[in-house]
Image (cartoon, rainbow, N blue to C red):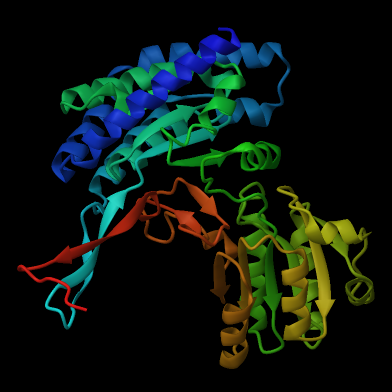
Length: 427
């Protein structure tokens, strides 16, 4: 396709999504669940075709000498297909937020005023190499009553188009139009530029991928964007912390998995307990191959305790999301210094305090301006599934509309509802 063809194609996709959004918005919970279950059955029945399509994508990626981690994210197996099927079934089992009416109050005039939860409309989702996102995103948008336009990475085009066929088969089985879920069929980057600048058709964009992708979309979109750029997550170990608990939590927050955006990247430890916490904890980190980038005070404590192989932290380390077995550590003099550090270098994603001091805990949760704040728990809990959302479309560090893990409710909005019995305004 040339640019003119892509513009025409995307306009058609957008118009079809807008029309489909009206149909799916009024679909019953039972009908949406029927569609989700039928999509799961379609994937189960198309395993051979899906694996064959994915093999084409994997072969092309290997020919371009991509790294093993990239190939692993792209590759489909019977296990990953099982996960997709289970994901669709889990979303079907979730409560439907659409149509919920809350906060009904009777006014002096006699009218009753409340709010009703409604779909956003058309959700555009832009993502990279993971084909499972196609199913996760489609399922959440479908259950929340939204039409969706999916633009996956070019490296997964054959996989995503085959998954789209399964989704369309499931929608048809429930009597819903295929335009409820559309997968962009071109890999041309101009399609993304069109998608993010069609507010007449698209209500919100959700980018899922690397920082450069999200930054570019955020800068160029004329459609509202739900996103986060960095996950520079902190844990502050307060002077009153339970030492054993602090070591257990801080180990988990860094080493349970290195690549997620809710993994701790900077550890802040109060000077009053640093000599108790840091030596034992850092021996655990080094045994697991974690590189430690430390401030001068932390270095002195660890060196005295017999640890070596430390790296001096640079200013840039405090504002780096490593997504790797690297950790920055700073010893601080107070709760205030810890919160100031988080405000200066953090990304407003997820931050935690470990403390037995109630007042300090309450100050931390009130003053640390992050989407998720935890007391005495690992940052790795900042996740839609762990929060009881069932699944998430992504994590938002924005303050408007949705913040933190975005699940079904985050893909809806509210409108005012007024119930009357003939009342008229007289003043």
